[in-house]
Image (cartoon, rainbow, N blue to C red):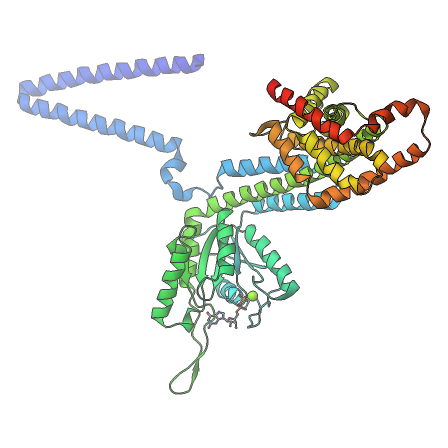
Length: 542
Ligand SMILES: Nc1nc2c(ncn2[C@@H]2O[C@H](COP(=O)(O)OP(=O)(O)O)[C@@H](O)[C@H]2O)c(=O)[nH]1
Ligand SMILES: [Mg+2]
């Protein structure tokens, strides 16, 4: 506390004390005088009255002081400007900031621009602050009619054939008691025939996914094709009002029965209150005297429900939606980056698989288990890691490569690969080259499995997941052993590895004869035996 403030406090305290002492002494004097001149009872009453008066004065003083200090609090909630919940919008802003940073890493220019555009749109809607209502539902259910009635003028063309509304059209309107402006978007319907309809349906779905509030228009009982999108929208966190339109076509009892059934069907994701019945553009009726009468639209149940929801939850709906949009965009950016990285990493794996095959082709290995070690190249691990933004030392890469090679051997995958490859090669490779070719192509295949496993590892922030390294490697082996893939792979391998071997075999160089000796043994059979002993031994080690 500052010195002047302390001095003021002391002075105020002394003054108050002086006043109290003065007051008490004058009250005592007064009391004595009245008690002596009149009666002691009267003196007591007088003192009581003075004390009550003083108490009231002090209470009034404190009350007004408080009023002066916090005028907003006392005036009540109504005077406060509507404010979007801060935490959610801040989270959304953080997401958008992170997205901008991620976007820089996306090489595909078109995808990058699309993401940036969407981020700007989200920011703009954050700044604008209007509530976005999207009218969605089956074609010809009466979406455009509902929008027209809501907007109070002929905002769009209303017609019987499906597909009148080409693109999402937006109108702005104000509702009594709602401060924010409402932007209401009419969409093309779902369930339209033909390709153009499918495109429009996709557009409608996108618009619905961006809404703060959805008016899901039906013209009867809920069909399966309507149920699915309605539930999906609820699952992604969208608030929907189910609007049962064209009720003028039904007798009251049927209308009530349909309404009850609708509420029953959407139970669990749309509350009963949010299912309303309207007639947006009722049919003309011919009266008994032959005159034609056009009934007025009846959309009050819808207006009342929209107003009630927006009053109670409008701010939350906006904030939730902005957060959801930014999260979805973030997800999209992450997927794009993942796809891009995976393509780059696949290229690395492909390069190393043929390098490995080439090396083994000219120098086959005497022991089959060594194949795994030879196939998992530490340099490949370093390069994949780099694509995923991790700088690995070559020693760490060697460690990782070794543990993966050990896993390949211990799980029987080396043997499995040799079987797959030899079956595929037997038909197309000449007998004397078969052993060499099997080893070379198997090395390529093992490199591929190892590489793909490392991609999974780095994709998940250097984590092998709950099942550990073994599960990842097994899965990659299973994924890569599909018939069509093996055929294509072996065909490629023959062109890249075996055919050059053939040419080379026709003009052998003296120093390479050693490897020919190894190869002359029935390599595949022998490797089978080797595998048994080695794998058993390894299983014990683990
Ligand atoms: N009887 C009746 N017909 C309606 C009602 N609302 C719309 N319609 C008719 O349904 C057809 C399709 O309406 P429209 O608003 O274009 O449907 P949208 O394709 O969902 O936009 C038109 O012929 C409308 O006149 C209604 O409340 N009652
Ligand atoms: Mg329409």
